[in-house]
Image 1 (tube, rainbow, N blue to C red):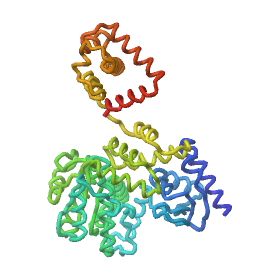
Image 2 (image 1 turned 180 degrees about the vertical axis):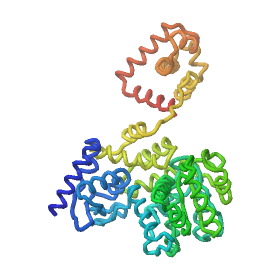
Image 3 (image 1 turned 90 degrees about the horizontal axis):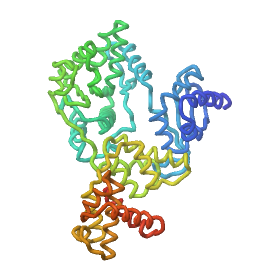
Image 4 (image 1 turned 30 degrees about the vertical axis):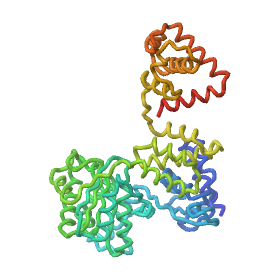
Length: 464
């Protein structure tokens, strides 16, 4: 136990030197080392949320620190004190699922080196899949319905339809998740089949190593023995002529034998630059399907799942606000929830709408609707239920005067117009009248709580 604490303590010194102190106090200070036997190292974390966050953001740093201190690779396990995913007490232990690129490359290279003729037993096969990314937590919406349906169809009718499957779309729409979901379903249904998920970057690293060691043919033979090959971000092979040539031979061999090929890209095949034309033509042989940015309903579905998964309670108005304003990437949605929890822990405060707005504003760029003079006058007219012609008239009725003064005040606050210009826009009044109106409203805001609420409501309508 002493060696366990010592190793973790020395490891945390390294971690602390590489991250901000607030981050360290939030995510690493609560982690407790509890066991170290052989190559197995176990730490205790407060919740599954901690485990997921550390795995997603700091796995590489933790592994590198442990290796430097222990002098060898360790298998990291997390003991979760309260499993919030099912709201039950007690402890559960999970093994780290995240591997560094170097470790992934080493695992595949080990398979390749031991079995250059691709005779790898299924029990020894490493598909490089993340078991947490499945169809169960890949939520369906209009933006991904076709891609998901085709993916499930492939798993039901292997090698008979949609080969190759080329999925394209901008970053953060769920392409990688879908690839892992297809791979995991295949492993579940056909455990005797060899499924391999690999990023284009790692494929390039492996090929470069194989070429350096004069085993390029073994590299190609290894991949030609796979039953389902999933290559993520194929656009990253742009300009890599030798790697493309190797992939061309692998593609042809697998397709000829009816083996399933799945590729993802941020562009359509026709838009790919730096990829050989003969490869691009083959990418079009099967189904080319686009995944779009998630719509509002899908964003809400993803948020509710993330909230439930981590045992959180977030009011519906906050969920609505996040879903309405975080519209680009699915990863952004999950990141917002993570940031909300982190801010709540660091600041020891509840997750409310004000906190959500601050976190969202820091995380994503929110396009604010421009406030125009016409918009201001229309909103004020509607709010006070007074015709715009009356606001522009000479009437001295109290309610009309108030609406007129509010309109002038807001025009000065939200535009660059001079007092004279504003006066000409609101009933052709002089600059002194507008200045008087501005000061009247400003003074009333300082002393009248009810009036402040009224102005707040109007400001809200202006920004919608």
